[in-house]
Image (tube, rainbow, N blue to C red; front, side):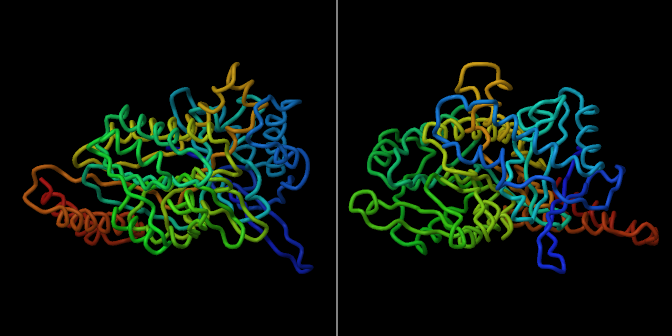
Length: 447
């Protein structure tokens, strides 16, 4: 799959002034590749400041197609680098209908992190992030390679539904409906804060759902999550990127007695890095950077979680449920079609995310490009992913070996393949052949 990667970095000069520089990272055959230019837009200036001032819960159309103006201004800001614009224009002109060419922003620059790259608007193609050909996401880190996970179905989905002052039942019903419609083999654990949600889940008595109450301490909650070994972790709560970033997870005592919520940091969530494929933070400010801190979603990926989705600002409850249903229906349906015995799968979370953005637009009457120009909610979800490729190896059925033995064997094959792919061109042929033979012998053990 071809893709465009725009790298944005900070440089502090001799006068202690910070410059935000951009350059194309992929493709490499563009003008001025490797030569950075200063980004020509700032989040604290109009029109970005104007869009940030619009309440996410605002139901009317924003005057003057402000969202489109922000997207156009982003395109202008990137146009200071001829190679970046050449790469974007090439993606538009050479990506056929039905093909996918992701647009990734790889940024470690705080000043750029606050910019809503998801609304990038091309003069000919309109909004990149709403077209299936050009899903937009953000890359964290520089490391090349592969993050591999082994799985034997069912997929384990853990939902922490714990926003103290919000009805979580619509969020749960959207998630439950997505699981049912996907036909994927899923085992769900719901951690409920509110009594009404717990009663609803218990009454439904779905055999694939386990109900638990949110524990009363951060340590107990993290232990309970680790025990459940989630592949997909969904959190519906409040949160902030202030004070090193945290989520506010309500307990039953928070709701009924007014006790303080649990405060869970990004570093605590990152303890699940060897288990989780994706963390979704359907929480206020989950993707919003503070003055000296990247977002919680950024932080958990920076600490090793393969991918995370967060909200740039607070999101309206109805919009949150719409997002939840659309995202998981498409993500789980895609997994159901690909997680077959013995398959090696590279899940693409950006396409389900694009569909959820379109679903948020569709809550308003009119063509999606027109609605998108004047309504803010669809701009809030942001996805971060590691620079490494993420793959899932599915267990084979009927092998005369345990799941642990399969996992060790797949890890051995993964390591040998990485050795093979990293061999220099001048490596002696005998050594190349030896590595290929080792791979072939390991693969025979899976027959």
